[in-house]
Image (cartoon, rainbow, N blue to C red; front, side):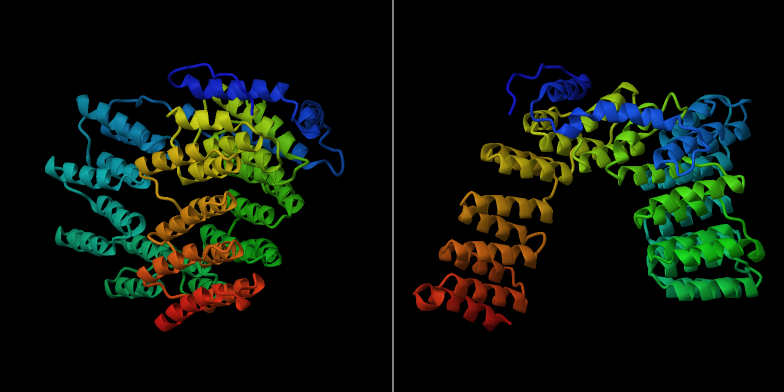
Length: 579
């Protein structure tokens, strides 16, 4: 471990200072691998590769990715920075138009800011403005605020219209899954003299299908017909999605054929859902067939279609075929989207030979007129960490901070994992203790693992106390790390008690089997008795693997011809009596 104090820096500068110190240590560290030492040369050569002539046959994937970035930058896709923050005219319609635009590319907070500004001006919000705000809050997962905004609209004397009620149906059916409330909203709309339309019922169907309640969704379709409200394509598509989510591709295709027969032909969105299911099932030949037949079936593939297909190909390790779809997209007049680039970036980062090039392209994003977000940085940093290029992770993190991109929890988790792998555990712990990062269970699990390996038990105890104080519950990985590490340190009583505590939240047969073998191997029969008494108190039923493992371990350690066999028999008798 490297010595020397970390300079005390307060506020948001601490994380940057820690990263800079880690980077300085990395540059001078004698433990750097040959690959890390040659990183600069590899990145330099990759930059030369990016500027290859587009006509070069068999060009590398990063060259094709670079060209995709250029096409994306020329496509003029909007970002939040390009949306104006003032309405053209101080009228309700102008404010509503601007709030809708901000909701699409910004955040609910920005929508609320505009709404507050509108209320403070002489321009009074109408039902459309309230509906836009309620929808933005619902989409952002701020459900209680959305309901409160609806109540505010009613109490201010503004009468909700059907759009307002439909948004409430979406809130209860699709967001909170409180279907009783969704049905109540529909009844309330009827009571107020409004007639639910196909959007109302289709939204309810979408929520039911996302919750796996497909049969109930079919019942809503029947209800629509009883109410003289003809189903539309949007009514059937969620059911197709429900079938696809469950892997029932044939029922989904059958329903799509029925849709065409009843005058509700599947749309591009419907086919995108089917293509996603086929990709998950590895049916890429079927996808090609569907795309080929699209002209005759009356639908046109869009960016989402190709993104879905490329994502499936990438996840199946077929990177070259995924990149081939870029040319297909270009041929039909479609430009890559930010999601397209994120998918292809994932492809590059799965290849150890390409991940350093992905890092270089990400660092040069401004030069390429490519707006890179935290998700893109996480993808590349994750790829670098997986490939063992922990120095590259720190460099990219520093670049991210310099560009003013706010790191997410996943960013910090990747950074901390990389620091630990690179032998910079002290710096990782310092970042954790800085109070600047919002840790989750993954963060704690990473540090616990490396602290245990380093034998720093006191710091482990402190970290566990901090975890409890932060109201973060340990998961299976936490307990697995703790028990394995305690056993390696010969602390079998603590390991046993740790397993018994884990029973309060979950029971892992695999973890129990490993603990049994360790206890028997080290002749820790008192702990073994304590372990099974703890299991007995929880009234847990054990499967045959537990008994089989105990007997095999006892025989292997020679218990059969010694007094220890009586302890094993006592445990077996107690456990069998409970079955």
